[in-house]
Length: 308
Ligand SMILES: Nc1nc2c(ncn2[C@@H]2O[C@H](COP(=O)(O)OP(=O)(O)OP(=O)(O)O)[C@@H](O)[C@H]2O)c(=O)[nH]1
Image (tube, rainbow, N blue to C red):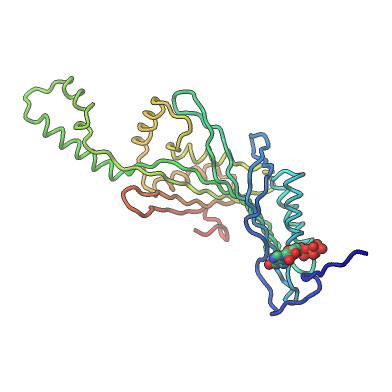
């Protein structure tokens, strides 16, 4: 004879009645096969959040195991893409008939891409934090893709101030000489006295989020990474030989930017691309001059869309 187990969620009522906006699980660790446009399907180690609302004020609680098992099924037998997220969200709601009519899910993982060195022809792995979210909220489906890209930014103000010091040092060194020797100047420029000051630069992070639609089933992760790196020009590097480091120094010098410059560059590229229903971006310059960060935020500006 089997003993039936108590089923609190089904057979008891709430101690205190009330509806809840979101109930679920956070930080579920699961491998996921990810479909990313232009890449072979790849297993990632994901952290998943899964939620439904609780619209029945008297119900004790939701059925967490049902959400978990639906995600587990996707992990073991499915592929994470636009359609499978829609199916998952539908499953969250249909498994909670009478309890829920809203659902959301979030997948966080690191996605690795091979990136080429600037000059040397080498290549190496770079890891990009990716967040994919899906929700059905008041009947409206939203699927979003967000990616962070790290890059280097050199301060244009600091560069101008450094140039002024270099000019002053040049005057101090050569203004008394009646004739200037090209070789002397060339050699002097190659010393630390010749470049008496260097502008500060910083590790920076561009966060970009886009709203997807059903025309794109595989996530455009590589496209977004390429777009950000091509716009900003100074992404952090993987494999670096000296010739790559020198080119990185040149690119930094030729792409001086405040956080406003970086945001406008990316905004411009996203407006040119123009095939995302909406975008939101935040630029973070993790200042080396200050202990705080310089930040700028903007969106596509769609009515009723992302708010800054
Ligand atoms: N709702 C809810 N469940 C919780 C919580 N913390 C742990 N659980 C447990 O999650 C487990 C799964 O709940 P259910 O999905 O209702 O499990 P079940 O009754 O075996 O599954 P069904 O037969 O599909 O309803 C239960 O053992 C709960 O005790 C919580 O804060 N809220």
